[in-house]
Length: 291
Image (cartoon, rainbow, N blue to C red):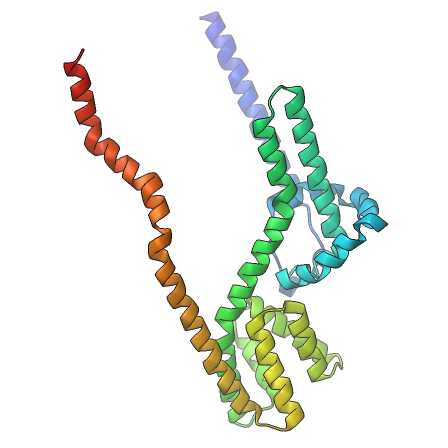
């Protein structure tokens, strides 16, 4: 009885200590903040928040000559993901270096403990996580922009056809729309125009910053219409119809692929459960007969 009480007390103390440590870490992570414009608030992954306190020490290595190629690669990709104002290219390279250091530490501890397979898998995942997260964020953002673009073009077309200027129409639309990825980029472009940048230059900068094919095609048609003196409203209507048809085609393609993709979870998870439920009692009954 005394041994049981001691074990229970030890387990309770360990649980309380772990809970307190978790609460302390969560509170500390909530205090980790990165300066960025309030209107462009972006979620920062939890694993990034874990390494951000060590970021100042890693910037020195990230800014060195061997890492400059990484900075050149990641600078445009961060803008494509919408995090160009939150992380500089040097910051992201420093985060990658920190993840590589943690991966090496996990692998070393696993080797010292005599276990290699699980630490090796965990180390590979940690080393690849920043790049995978960035690529997934870019893909998700481009898809969001493609979905929102036809609706914005329709609103712009109606406003311009009613006699309004493109910029004033864009301002009214942004004021009434919920902020999303496309609205964020259009807001940034509108602010650049307000600060005195030429409209064509701001639009070209938008296309170069986002690098989404549909948005780039639309911007090029608007710039071409301005340079040739063609009606912008007509170009906006053409682009709106084109982007809507493209969005419908993509939705139709994804719907057709769903029936094929669902086969994998059905075979791996649903069919085994069905076989266990149907054949399990029969197998147990047969096993009892041959005892």
